[in-house]
Image: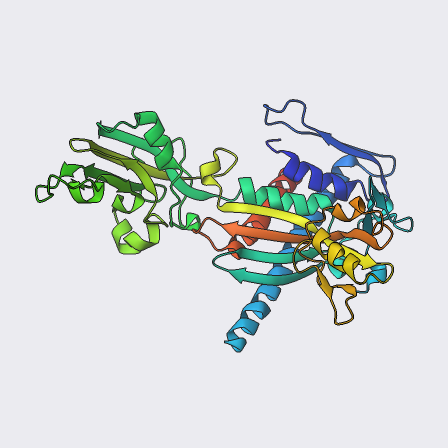
Length: 84
Length: 332
């Protein structure tokens, strides 16, 4: 994986909070190598399914944040336009 | 939001204490619907000078930090990457000059350009490259009197500014962009000083890149967040002590009413210094805390993109990362 702490930590906090997951963590084995090890351990589900679910949840989280932000920005701009 | 439901972190004299009732960080189960209900965004201000300030409420620290990191180092912008030096007789060395040119902020919208690929030729194409030239020669003004000592009056072009940069349209670029839409954001950045006979002749190549590669590609001046402070007065503080209390916090945080007693006017912009704890007569009077999931983001743009656009672009980058991995998993 060509990723760093940005995705690693965000994904970890989400997957670690699933009740099915026993353990979830990530490590960057060497700071100058663009490599990330991600570990998910579960006794009920396949780890790959959990990873996929985590990514999908993070994606819809992004979507929702974007929608909320755009909505707020529009109403903020409208309020400014009204006051001037 | 009621203050009771806000998860607090208490700032005591020598330690930070979690609320005894608050188990949120450790045990909370993630559920996307619950997250959607909790998430709140409030835009506080947005102006050219101070940038954008907004509150992101109800998120995990990792998510807030991911957004911050993305804005700093993974949202693309255009910057000068290659400098061809045809002539440089000024006292500033070639490599230092090239580095300075790289740091000039450009107005070009990075969303309209592509990354340079391995295949694209050395010169680049009009979709991924912007070209500029800088040709300045310093001469002595003939009309200047002998007794003049002001450089502005004896020399011509003795100060090279970013405004001297000239854009060279590539291919059909002239039909799409104007000098104002791709040139330098600031006209008055001093690049170098010259003396008569010194000359600069440079050709500059700007490409799209991300802050992870080099800080000059970062689209923000600053992007940071802090937690919302909360200050509570446990007892009445009046008279001399009220003024002392006021001086312990940032200006505007503590107000003093007509009875000379202190009250919390606006804790938001407190610097959260623990100065109060230096005064034994005040230590028991205040409870300082921060709201654990209330992030105050401040985003200042360099100028190419608006701060709100940078934030949205950052989220899009994160989304794209997720999408790429999901596609990879599904392909297997």
